[in-house]
Length: 101
View 1 (cartoon, helix red, strand yellow):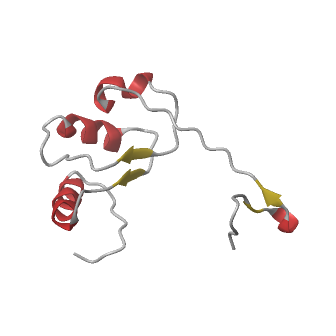
View 2 (cartoon, helix red, strand yellow; view 1 turned 45 degrees about the horizontal axis):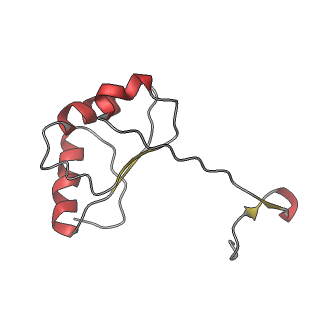
């Protein structure tokens, strides 16, 4: 059970702090992916991937990566989310979502 004020209960109920580092890098993932530091998660916030052809290369790079990093993808609205979900499905991504389309 998380309380206000951050941290979480570790072994023996002792509150521990989590360290999160976020690094934003300008450019396209598929052009910089191999040069990026090893991460734990790929985030695409309101990516508009249905509008940009460059996502073709990026999705291929991400899904073929030997690192198998999880991706967190959001969309501007439900209509866009349905389209983006289908794009990801078509590229072979394993999709875990909270709604049934």
